[in-house]
Image 1: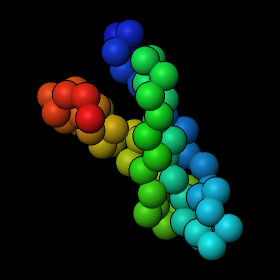
Image 2: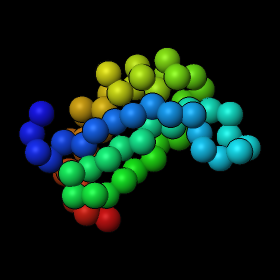
Image 3: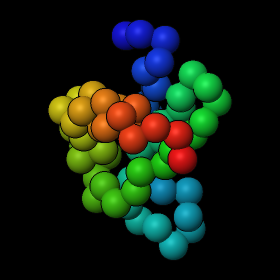
Image 4: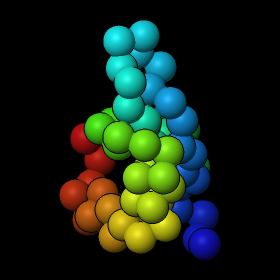
Length: 65
């Protein structure tokens, strides 16, 4: 993994009304993203394993917000 790649962590939604799971994304720059809407921990972990690499490429190509 290069220095520009973030780390990913699946966690329960911190919103007390949320019953889903989130993927927390920590970029080396200190930027943080939270991706919501995963119904289960398995769904969040599967997204990290199968989709996160393409998501990173898309985010880098889009550039900074």
